[in-house]
Image 1 (spheres, rainbow, N blue to C red):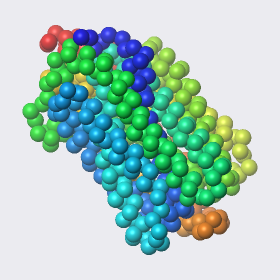
Image 2 (spheres, rainbow, N blue to C red):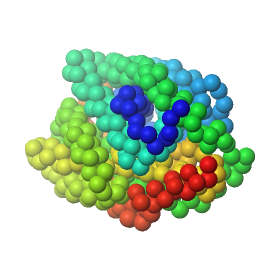
Image 3 (cartoon, rainbow, N blue to C red):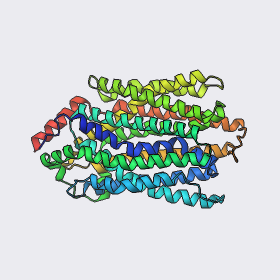
Image 4 (spheres, rainbow, N blue to C red):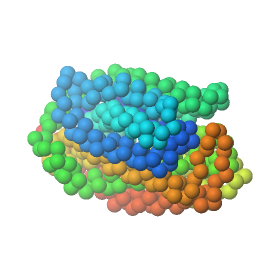
Length: 460
């Protein structure tokens, strides 16, 4: 048996981080390439593509708290989380590949139907794996700094997965001449690895989780409240709402930029799509290196402080991107480097704050409800991102954006170019400023968390 405040081993941290690849590999290529793929390869109208992605994300958001709530109540020899991960691993890999298959039709509604159906099953499998996996961070340890360290490993693998998927795409795009085959091969490799990494993570973390289960009787308790009662109770937790705001604003802004960046590089900067991949790798590589710095600094200052230090740097980079002109390639890469410095804190801070909120909820309610908390925060984030991607598609369509046809690169109207710049610049800046406001008012500091743990210990 083991105490939850005992230090985590490197093995546990490493294999917990490995599990992030099951989500980051398929989701990163979707974020960076999918809207561009749908409009310029599959031939789907930007407006319909935006609607399809909206519906997929809304469904993804709906199933998050439900699966979180169900996983809180799951009882098996493997605990509450692992059965979901194991059963979802194979479907996750298969549907990750099917996203990149183009049906033999030009009918817009048939294309829309195909990608909508694949989206439905993909996001169901994605949630079954990633939501229970995320909840493990609140169960493997209760130590304030150890959670930041654990999330740093997860974030490192998330960024590493992003870099790997982009590098893989760059190599395959350079070697394979057939445009459709490029995306199929990338999707196949990322889907296969997503399934494998899920099993590897379960194998590497189960020993620690099993020991914690034996020691912590709270893990065996579950709430008797209904799903809707728990959902309302979760939203009544004020620190949780701040964490949700931080997470939502961070990823709403960054994923909006990621989805629009291929259009910005190709249409506004007049560069090939290989520059987009190299630029994205620069951002992620910088964030990966800065992860070590921010994780080290977080042991000396609060989590909120490193966010308040890092995100303004990213805001400056985004402003520079908005003002960037064709030909300023070196400056473009410097801005990518600058953006990565702050983006690292967006990976670390919200996820390391959320387990602390779960501890506060246990103090208030007497129940451990990691699943519902992680489910709700991811649900709200996904709804926000869904509407953002929907609006990106609608804005591009409304601005007169011209789809590529049979490899012919069209000349975009000025209205479309300005729409792309606005989506890349001012809109995410405003969203990130709202996130800074949320983190400023977040109340659970290191000292407050220690008080929570002491009160929990006195109740046992």
